[in-house]
Image (cartoon, rainbow, N blue to C red; front, side, top):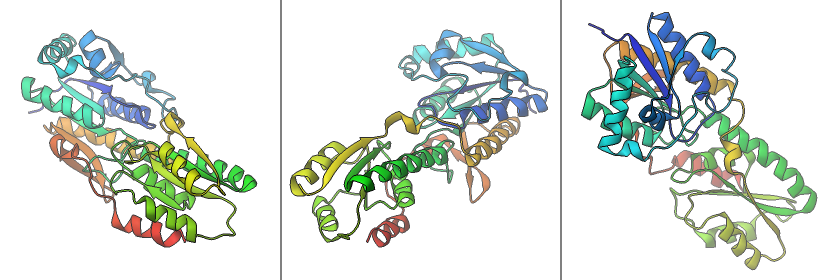
Length: 324
């Protein structure tokens, strides 16, 4: 028998476009099922500090198109301790919160796992991260927007690259995962894509630049920030080896996290928000809700947070064929 009357919702870790759409979906679904909803600001840190706000239909009006998160987000060192988690538990019990929906990534779900183990509080997670590096969903909330932001930026960079016959090294986010670099690199027609999952062969890169089309007025190399060499050093090496190229480095940085979520991210967040609330009502906990082959899929937190260690060989093949 379901005993949940009040659900708490929070966002944690790095923000991603579509988090607000997810919050909206969770709140409205909970109200649809006659549940109370409490928003927890600043993630686990706000949970420990007792930062709670009641949520209503009006609370989530006109936010589906907004980037960032209205509940704010933070990383919490205190929640990594038993004392911090106990304080957080005491705070949510004061609010009569019976279950939680956590929107975030690896750190968020690791914390949720510990919370469930110690206090048996039901927690269901939504994959909110631009890196798309969680197992159990084809796409994470924010990934589609992030790669489209990269493509838009690199398209503009190519305009100036062609005007000046320049070679641009563009560094994109992806400390542990090269999925942003890989997919956006294919989308912009990059000459090369360097990612953490594959060992960077600098001689192969030099060969590609040496043997590539001589009549092409611009060249773009996409580098994930987690690449073993890194964009700055690669730019320096190319300058030394190919002084004929006017080589420039552009680091896109946090622009990739911002902006209005794409239609895909809004729909994904809306679907997963509904599924998360319904999962709690059906007695599920300790799982991430995702979409696999366009169907709702449930993955235990301990499986979801295992990083994808290999890049899709089909995408790598596309890079090699199309970069000629």
